[in-house]
Image 1 (tube, rainbow, N blue to C red):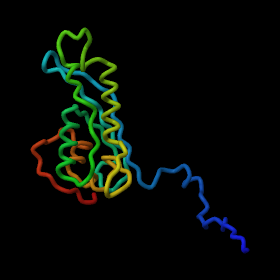
Image 2: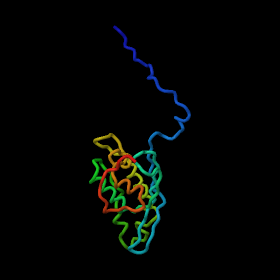
Image 3: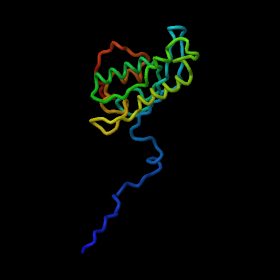
Amino acid sequence: MAETIADTRRLYTKPQNLNDAYGPPSNFLEIDVSNPETVGVGRGRYTTYEVRLKTNLPIFKLKESCVRRRYSDFEWLRAELERESKVVVPPLPGKALFRQLPFRGDDGIFDDSFIEERRQGLEQFLNKRQTCLLLLFFRVAGHPLAQNERCLHMFLQEESVDKNYTPSKIRQA
């Protein structure tokens, strides 16, 4: 009876130098949601979040940007991506309707713990891995189909969001 011996030889790999090991990655996209600020008074009160982008992907015209966005801007982005791209878009953190009821005894949607919880949820929305038909995993902003959407570029890199824009695809910058 012949014995089968597994081939344990390794594939030839290029030796790694320090720049390969510790240099910047060939393609990266980092998005952070941070520094929530509550502005306004009464019914005109709302919270904005700082959305900071760092990338070396050629599709983005700016390699670093920082904008402020409201929860409603995230809702708009999600709706646009669902309508315009062919990707599965993850859900946003909930609207927290019960926190908006009067006479609660706390600050409701302006409570620091709720704002932090929502900030984490919004950051996960932009970076979350979801199952997709085209790829096993993707992040909203990291998905190749989503990266071509003008709404994503506007959301991440322009000072204000023009919700009356004409949907279109972005070509390489």
